[in-house]
Length: 572
Image (cartoon, one colour):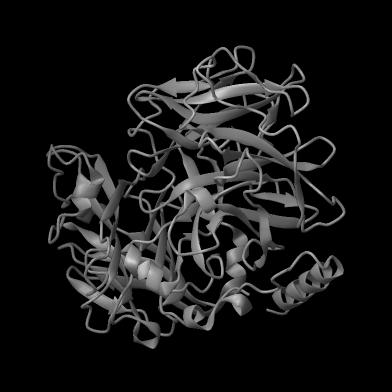
């Protein structure tokens, strides 16, 4: 606790050194939250969100001079999206958890962005200078790419940015076959062996989604490549593309410009407007031909794996050079009606930053909350070797249930695994499996009931189900669910039940970690192999009336090898 306090005092003093008459620094985001907002029951305690109003995409995260920077799409004027008024909100932190909100970094002001400053990315040049490429909605409502640079590189908080007089740097036209209404969100640039920078920008031609490639020697004059980095038919628009290398042998992160080689794979992530989900593929980047080829079994469409199988969109990664890790950010929108958001005075928040790396199989990415989040843990409750009998529910006492971090390891005996139900041949969609209301698989559902009322009129169920793959099969199918159907007695909220297959062996301990923060539930199955995020709005399970339960609705017993639950402090 003392370290966090002194860290933030130091941040306060350092920010004060750079105060000027024309810049207002908000020293503590919480202190500037209007009184009618900060005590609301759904306002999160340790997730980042602006003091008020609407926010969406994460744009240009980075670390500079030891300070983390978070940029985001923000409507300063209300709790609904207004693309023509969008600015780049800006916040800084020394630990990714406690944030200082600054004045917006980029505002609409020039013909090339007068109708909105949209998403983009930060690139750190070889001299250590950060620059931002972003999409501007210009005076003709065309999507064009612009450049801004820091005004004062000695200021680690980078409060002032200067737009390039050359803007827009990249424009769409019929000549280059770029759709002017579908050309946005440039990636972090990477530097090639030929001495040229490269960026890719999301676009579409008809129903073809594509990542358009441009190259430059000086970061100002950009030339479109003959071929896109990658494309796929039938997907629609590719928003917020992200392209980065991952190590094949360990969990360390790699700089975006790290050269390809036998020990490196590449990841291409796109956000599909058709489904409002983020999908990624793993593959090979051919530096000579400037094309990306997904590995066998991966297709850049809705069949591709997702970062998160719940509410999580417009994600962005960056390379944390100080800690040699790649960090993933994601926007989590509301599940409440727009009228409720307007009444609350805010909408949208940031998922907890996640370290991301390539699984040892090379076939999926693994995600885990950054270690800094553990500094907010306080009182711990521990269980060991408890038996969850079929049909049982056990309350976890002694933890602040509306704001907690819970990690459980379940174990199922081999004898009980043989009693699992056989999965139906048509059950290929895990979300539909999880939506089977009173279905028991013999083994499961078992897991956690979070944000629950005392008598369980309301709860969100994060659970596991296990099936046998066939009548005589020794193989099993494991499904992870986040069921919001009973999350609130309130009508009108989106209570979609989310589900995903969990590629683990049920003969080994099954891990489930859940971060609970008043109106958001982030869950990580199989040590981060599958992630599901939900937004929920209980009417009864609020504050001290919130409870936490472990449960087993299946017919077979399940062992809780260990359960650790921590009360979580609010971030500063």
